[in-house]
Image (tube, rainbow, N blue to C red; front, side, top):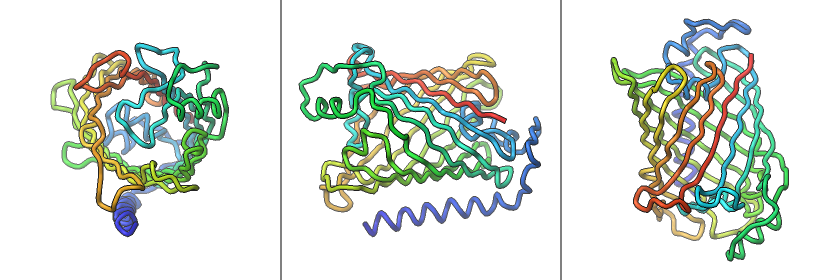
Amino acid sequence: MATVASTLLCGLALFFTLSSFAATESAPKKNAVSTVDKADQLITNRRLRADTGSLSLWSVSTGFTYQGGSLAEPKDAQRPNIVKGADALTLQNLTGDIGVRYRVTKLFSITGSTGVFWTTPFHDSIKTKNKKLRNQFDENHQKLTLNDPMLKGTYVNKYSYFQSVTQLRLTLITNNQQKLDGYQGNYYLSQNFMHQVADTKFSYGTNIAVQFYSFSKENSALTDQIFGFYPSVEYEINDKLNFRSVFGTFVYQHLRSEESGTYEKRKVYQSLGLGILLSRDIFLYPNIQYIPSDIRMDRTNIALTANINFF
């Protein structure tokens, strides 16, 4: 636990150091939206813009995510755990979140959000021989619960040719799937870099993320630490559409039952998606995830996310 605490403290120190640099920028005027806003000068990537929020001093953001089943059995309530993650949601689910965001400066903002979590919203039965999954379905199917209240800090900038988004998220876990297992809280720090190749429609980058869990009950099968490195590439098809692929190349998890410093590597996965830009503040992203070394319809999951910012 000392390693966890020291790593998290280092991450927090880095985040708030970056935030202090942002504090040298004057806060935006109330509800001011400008095409020359400094945040938009630095961040031109469509997905990053939608994810980091509106240009207003105060704004409301909403996010919707549907984590479906496999391409082979899209109507089945199960969502295959293709990466063998101990914290993975293994039943289809639909979430809707609403958050209030305040731009402390033009580059640094704080968002508080929560919403609803709906397990297997379109299913009243499941086909499985897995006793644990069957019990989880019987306990949670079509149940609507509060979805993970979260406090998020976001800092945007640009370093040389790379657009940068740093985020710290503090989350209370209330979704019924993870809460039933014994998860209580999540602490997540990420650094996202993207670079658009000059005079082309190609971009590349990576997301480096670390997260820690806290627990409400003893369960040695749960993971308490995850470290991930996720390279990505994008191609702008036109003004409204872009293709994106993410690779879960180096993702390691530590189980509570394992000795300190012992990590297991998750299966390498790839995500393919189509970004649909309806406006600067409305971005849709249907996508699939699969294992490149074992491409199968029954091991390829479907998902859809939407970011909608108001004001």
